[in-house]
Amino acid sequence: EVQLVESGGGLVQPGSSLKLSCVASGFTFNNHNMHWIRQAPKTGLEWLALIYSDGSHNYYADSVKGRFTISRDNSKNTLYLEMNSLRSEDTAMYYCAKWGKRSNYYYTLDAWGQGTSVTVSS
Amino acid sequence: DIVMTQSPTSMSISLGDRVTMNCKASQSVGSNVDWYQQKTGQSPKLLIFKASNRCTGVPDRFTGSGSGTDFTFTISTMQAEDLAVYSCMQSNSYPFTFGSGTKLEIK
Image 1 (spheres, rainbow over the protein chains, first blue to last red):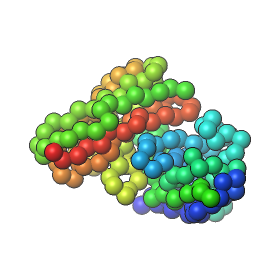
Image 2: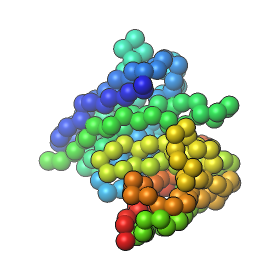
Image 3: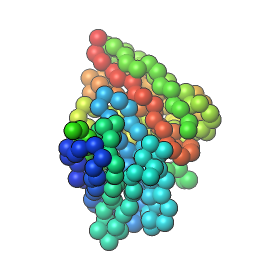
Image 4: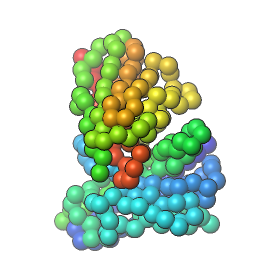
């Protein structure tokens, strides 16, 4: 069974940093691209970042580019999101998600973690 | 960025009703649209991929259709366990973008 377990969230002050983790199990982690998505209170989902299976490439949403860094340690089956210069608008539930194959040539976010909550407030 | 305009924002429905919601992309995304179900306190769950393909184990009362810029998600006969927020997502180009979600409530 695929499992993704996020951790590292909490209450932090504006301008501070936080590093989220996502431990994967139940699949071959180093074969899959991985993503971070967030959901602010009472709002919709926002895609944040992608990292390739071998860590060679990554992409970011403009809202976090230059402040957030996605990384992974395939030896530990773990995905990370390092967040710097946090703002009140970064307050959200943060999810990691697996990029999986659903049919020939089609991939999507086919498994999500339960999320870790980040609150940015003074 | 591609904007996914989802409508309606919420629906007040009765059990047994047919439910239809839409997502309109600001530019063509081919068939690269997925639909997610999110129940209260849970993470999103993939129901439909590539516009119209149901995931294994998803009841056949859930269907998706569309291509290009216009997509539709339908629940043929609303069940109590279907109460949730449903969101579309385009994965045609980065950044991936989601619709704002449709919240289903019981009338």
